[in-house]
Image 1 (cartoon, rainbow, N blue to C red):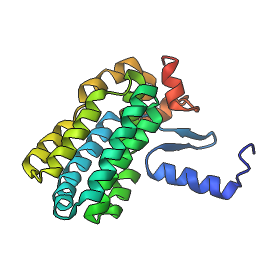
Image 2 (image 1 turned 180 degrees about the vertical axis):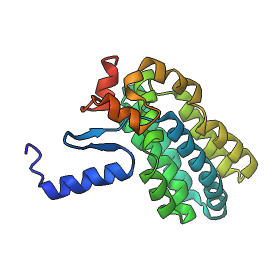
Image 3 (image 1 turned 90 degrees about the vertical axis):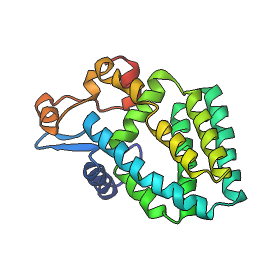
Length: 209
């Protein structure tokens, strides 16, 4: 009631979250936020990597100074967010940075699909940034991506991108041990355990589940 939202839009939003694997319906009990599946996150990362390499190829065929200006401007915003430590906004800006490639390649729909079906991958990235802080390496890699793109060096661009998309893997591996309550190997385990966090998962992780 505090948000003055009707039942229908709320129900539709919950159904959409369920389809994306971010919410679980519990008969006679209600709805809870799903736990993160590392296995699903890795598949979502794999899918994004395969698609985005092809996106970069198309991008180089069409990119001009306007796209490079947008990318450089995004990096400047990222540098500011690195100083302020705003992990949420940095996560959003990172998404905007990568969306430039899809947009110029004429593949906005592909970006929407990956965004809609990458919930676990997105959550673990955001959790990593929140838990361990914004990494300056990510910004440097973004700069290297821009440089390779400006030089029209596809081989170097793909090489840098592959490093970039897997750069958090080592950091992510310790998260399951540090926050076991946020992770699950299956939905059945979630239903058995029942009690999963209802509040903002970033706030929850700070309390040291």
